[in-house]
Length: 528
Image (tube, rainbow, N blue to C red):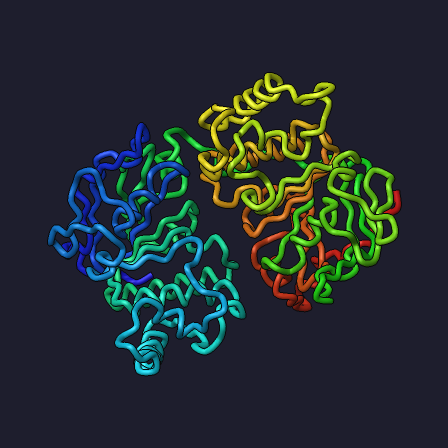
């Protein structure tokens, strides 16, 4: 990482920024100085006030009090258009792109000049070619957004901001949807931007990325700015403690697994989607009681479809799976409800799409999938008192905040939504737990809790299948790691054999000769 530009030249300064939303004090008297030509990290737990602060800088929100100085001058930012005019750009966690428009059309959208489109397109093409060369942001300008992988879509968002003249670039959780390789390239782009004088504000919960990519880091907790550090003078442990307000164990304590009987197997399991594309190709694997089996792979290589078939959400096209002695195949399909009855809990990869309903209260989300149970229903009506009490118990046990069963699900932070879903599934005491992306978008305090509970469940004799795009998480929790590529299982390694280099190469379907002896090929699904 090259050295930052002159730290006495302040690109952005916040003085006493304060913001309330009703009774919620989102930002409390925030002071911050960001030197020009540096990469400045902003970290904090979910709900710490990071997003509110960034939205104030970008003009989405107006601060109740305080000043924003850009290059030493106080500016009133009452809209994103004003922020852009002062050289501030923002790349949101969820991209603001039109799928059926080309890269070029997306970049000039809202920045067209005059009544004719062609001159704007011609000018933009020339400028984007210059920006792409200067900042290592190569993207096919005539490609449709929907045809581009996520990593290239993100580059389009950065190009959009630079095309509008951004000299201060805010990136909100930019690596959440990227592979390790794409993340590495993004950091190289950051370096190129910084070397050309662009100031970057990086909002993330990943401490390793903060330490790898930034020059300075500021920590927020409960709406306040609690610390500023030079990145070279801090470490993961100190930052984690500053974020949470207590010491955090970053390493998962776990003993060697003691696998017992086989609970779930697949035998040449194949799934073909409605377009005729094979998403799963003859996958054979097993899960035993008392072990965590991790699935590693670049997102989109069949992990999601495997989880959905095992959970009864998709019907296998060919092959079989066996859950606690019951065989399921194309001629004997199952359902999500039947799979739950067979002793399988499912924590889906996308909590907002499949895990809960945002408009439901917490207590309603806490019984989803189990709402027909006699626990919650009488002869004619449900039992609101029981439902409320059960949700309150789960919230206390899993430290879901705020502990209000009547609060709408959408009003909880991502980490607290995730804890509520995990609590719901674990509480039903399944034999097998399918866990998808358990800590996606979750703050470090909640990650510690979730990881600890996963190992506790393993030690209680549960069989756990873990799907995660976080290699660190897979290696920290798994006893065996199965690697998938293009819908197939390409290899299996034990926890002792696994390392990032080996798994990364397997994820790219590269198996050098010197590594082949360390890799166990997966056995066919065992019959129960």
